Every structure is written in C-alpha cells, then in structure tokens.
Image: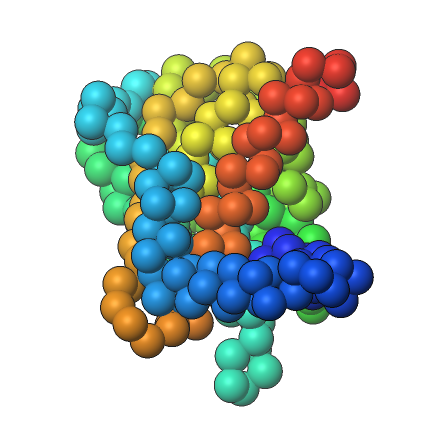
Length: 239
C-alpha cells in the first residue's frame, strides 16, 4: 500500500506539473526499477533490519514465556487459510525455542499474538495453532491472544497476559524487520523480552525487476514509518 500510495502521488504530480513531467517520469521509472531490481530495496532493508551482534542466545528461567508475533494469513490454492512464509519461520523458531526451554525450565509457554486485521475467515493466532501442535508444542502450553491488529496492540495485549502469570523470562520471536519496532512497543509497556530473530529478508540484486524486491521494500518502508510514527505518537502523548 505504501508503494502504491507513493506511485499515485507521483502520478498526480506528473499530471499537474506539466513543465517537470519528463524529468518526474524519468525519476519515477528509475526509482521503481531501483526498488524492483533490489538496488534501493537493499539499503531500505538494512535500515529496517539493523544488525544485532550483541544478541546472546536465549536464556531460560523456571517460568519462561516465548512470545511469537503474527505476520498475517493468506489463502492457498485450495482456498485454505494458512500462515505466510515469514510466519512459518516464526512458528519454527518458537517451537525450537520451546523444545530447548523444556530441557532447561520447569514451565515453558508459547504466547501466540495475532488478531484478524485482514478480516479473513479466522484470526492469525487460531490459524497458527495447528502448526505449533504439529511441531510438538502441547496445547496446554499455548496461550492464544487473538485480538491484536497491530504490533502496538500485540505488545499491549501480551503485557496483560504476562502480568497475570509471573514469568521469570520472556523471549520475543519475530522477523528481523519487525524486531526493532516490536521491542520499542514492548518497552512502552515496561517489558524487555529477549529478541529471537526467526528470519531475515534480503534483496535479490540484478538488472531485471523482481516482485519479491517490491514486497521487501514495502515491508521495510512499513517498519521504518512505523518506528517514526511510534516516536511522534510518544512525543504528543498518544502512546
């Protein structure tokens, strides 16, 4: 949506500003090619996914909660509601972390946070549940939070769950591009979970445009704008 909105704005400017039309058209086409070919998408992803060399492996405590954030849902070719690729990586990372946790701690739970912002047939959390069960996470150790529509609401609603359970350690599982904003949102509610990156996006550099690069650019812009929005809202007292 962000790229589409920018393209629509540029098109409106091109239509209204006749004198600059040739230069603006060249600029828009060049920017689109740089994004689609990965050359502009790569630095955007680098900004959205800062390296975290200081991150240590997750440490478990007697009561540990593994928080996994939703990444939407999609319909497959059979019209079934399924997790997207990035979410499958988050599910795998949280299940692996759960298995490690059970070897080291008395209580380990996975909190799955995701409502239904896309207005699909089911919420994100409910859609992800069978995938966690297939990865040997018992239903008794899964807590579903299925009302959140944004990362901010993920943090707010999960905080309400955490405050009732007296966990000793929190581990936050999400993709690299969402982690900086997610940590900001959780910090807003007084939580500092250990970050566990499930997957990282990369640009495919080349001469030919690739749809994947446009998707990655959209995701990076969404996160960067979201971080800026967080700081603006905090400054004016909305968050």
